[in-house]
Image (tube, rainbow, N blue to C red):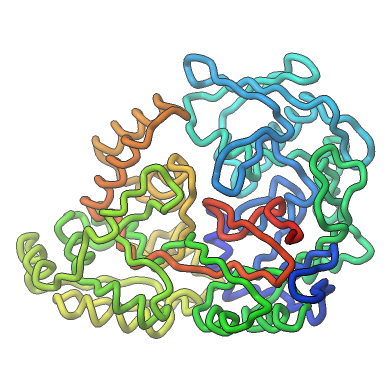
Length: 508
């Protein structure tokens, strides 16, 4: 998730190369050839699993299986691992592996290979490596291994369905960049290097000797575009079979096309991440009443209507619908109430207001968003000043130099509650001032102790506490459209903006 968000910030500097022509397979209504062409605006930095993260996962899923599979509804299912159990302490996870799987070159997959992958991922410093920092992996025999954690980590099983769980051929580890452009895994496809144009389109051929369920598609193409208008054109002309559209205007453009089917996917929330809850940069933000006042000052419904044509859901929480800690009642916790905002500011000693300086990256903060926030905050006496930052230096200024008290961001809402905590609440990348309190620490400890058991009530309480203390300034969850042509069925993936490769099939 971290890499996904940072990539969004860097999008102002680096844009993908638009594919001028892709192999489409659309036939008469209700039928489709056995090829699949997917459009995306995400560019993978490489095809080495240590670099995998976020919306780039489909590029990797095509060629690498994970230890555990995450079904579309978020349920965990066997994949390369057939069984898994924790010990009583919740710090040792034992896995049983398949014994009938080989890598592309015929080398058997076994526990030694799994250990090599996990050790390498932990030590390679990739975007998700922190998720298994400090773990040790031990091999019992060819089909059994154990992962020992320094303390319970309720997110571990989820991680093993994601980037950390991707299994590559250890024979390729000896050469540092061997997997960057020539992957070698156990997945349902192999990369066709002759047809692939790195940076533009990646073409995969169905693997004839795949151990698992055979894909409906003999060929898969994932093509990168630099704008959604081009993807919509590709969908309408048959160059593409599926794509996820974020822009409200582009969603509208496909809704009247009978040859296309759209499904609403709610994943990101947009809002201000208030980093400076201790008042280091902006002293006023140390008072919860001030942060609450900012929340009451926002006319979220009008923002959603103006910015996204109403395509989304106003919210005051950062937990998403796919998570156990989500509480629908918290969506309206901070109804638009400028009078209450003014009263809270006065109680906190800021009756005359204060200045809040936030960085503005125009790729995220559009004119509509910038104007709406300034207008709403000015109405309660808070002066919002936008600081224009250069995309090339923005990340350093915000996350390293800590020059700003917050920033407007789009953040994915994981289906895994611990991942929400670890990403947004725990000290780290998005809590770089290290904010915490006794309640957060108590509930985090309770969640660790509960492990993968029923911890919904714990996360509900944590979510409510974070909302009451106004750690964040959310606006709304964004509705995306998962679009596919006639003849293709695709299921949205819980906790992800894009579907997994396994979620596509030919319509019956």
